[in-house]
Length: 439
Image (cartoon, rainbow, N blue to C red; front, side):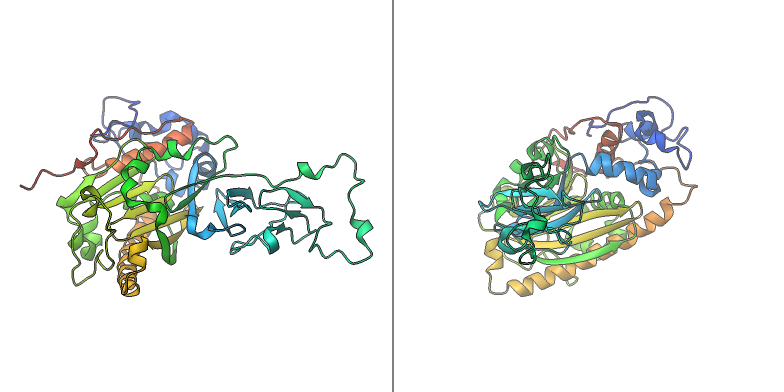
């Protein structure tokens, strides 16, 4: 059993003196508030209900969780050339991610340095003509390194002929265009995923990911590409989506189809040091009449360790990553409010499968199956949100055999809320069997 969480209370029932509801928001950053969830998982209670319902908790969480670390926001394939861009929302801030003329990744707050106009719309896929980001208000112009090029005298600024002198800022006192560049945001990649970090002094993405690069090394994820996308509007807190993903306790009742191809006895905990939770299933079951994970050819270069295993990882704080031998499924979850999440579901595959003659049929089958599974998940998660909003509920007991990853995740949230900088250590074994060996 993992010992990642810190014990801050001892003795008595885990349900003694659970916090009242609603809580004083000042207590959301107090270590003592979380003493019941800090207990070892076999005695712990769940994270306090206000963490899923309180607008005050949500506002603090945006700053302490989403604005202070690496957050997955998209895919490397979406910024595959100079000037290509995505506009993403992190902690309520709009961010531009693009590549400069040398192909290097760059990130900027989507804010003009003049009077704060939003520069690019959310659906922008190119920064602008000739790789220049132009403000639609007063035509200040920037390059893809963020340098201010014109204020507004610049090619394409549409200054009426003969009126150039009116717009000339060269005589402005104490003004230097070199000081007016776009406000930078740290960006990085891992595999096929694109990350941003709003912290002005960010740590490394590698430190946050821990041992995941080693665990996925044979998959060569940097060559996989997104091929199908769907969006879901979820009437629930993003953490409920996360926690549902982290356990398979609910499969027989919520996912009768998935339960046929993801047997309880084939599940292992699969997590080491890093800001993530993980499970794996092995062997990978074949499809049934209800569907399954077949449909595309497996990556031929996988070693024995990965050729018959599915990996299920929640990347802190907001991303579900499923990697099977033949495809990957990703859920990017964007918190909009305490009780609302916008989820983007993306189906990816490796180049060998994408080039297969029947690839489209395989993708169609996988997309239908994942949509079925995800819809079932979101329906139950929304029911949890309805229940957790009831003031009579003050927290529940962890089911230690199945819910250690939830306990790990909830303690990561607590760490950020109280200002503790810690990366969980994880299990000693690469794979930890959750059930007695059936043989």
